[in-house]
Image (tube, rainbow, N blue to C red):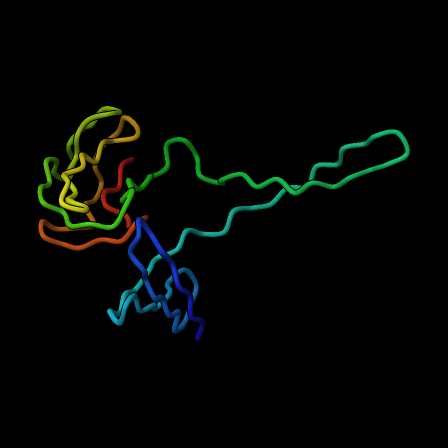
Length: 139
């Protein structure tokens, strides 16, 4: 069990990581339990740069995801989902408004970050989400 304290936009979050199995972490945020799905670790590459009389190894990480692989649109900040504009199987364009997130008494448009087809909607109207939470899957 690990304890962390985060301050995001002036709000303090006490996070307790209870357990991690594969890509699922069981955590508590300010006493509320969550199951968090983590991204798979990225593969690391090592590049050797040679200088006169010196060699330096620098690790480089790159996502292993292909360009056509499903991609999640994530919440940019904690808030509440107030409207979902798209539905599963909709074709969306980059920059298209997908949903509305209320945070700090302001409505924020959540837009598509790429062209594709909506494969899944991970939240419902009225759900509270944390920063980085998966909202919509686009392929």
